[in-house]
Image 1 (cartoon, one colour):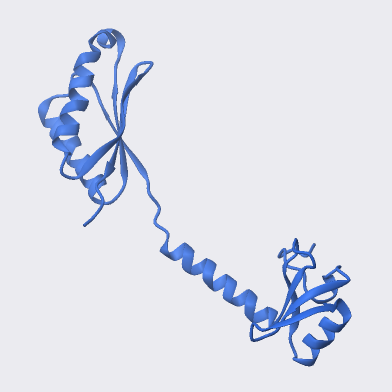
Image 2: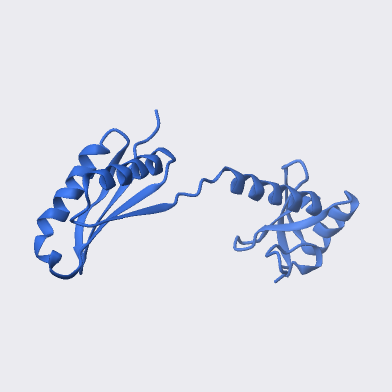
Length: 172
């Protein structure tokens, strides 16, 4: 198998192939030798497009141009994809109001930028007894970010942490 995964010309192993012309027209089932002769006559390559078909389907095309167009499509797809990041904000059950407001501004900014935001309340020492305080903080975050985001993962406890995941609301 060639390194790019597409067999062409002499790499095609089947005795008979179904041939599609350069303009997309059906030529029919020909022997591999006849099909390669047709492709050479047209100054192009015989490229296997469906190897699992019976008989395999081959197309007469300019392989260099085909490969270039494939690369351009991949490049365009990469350019159009958006990378969603998960940002994390950590708070404690004893987080003061001013610190909470600062962290809330960060959460709102992250959601506004289209990123997901994980809010984590972590407990130290005996604070673990007061999980209700951590739950109250997360409920307050949900209420304060209702206009820019929604909860994707409800608050859940894991060991000494309480976590939830917020996602931005779809843009209108």
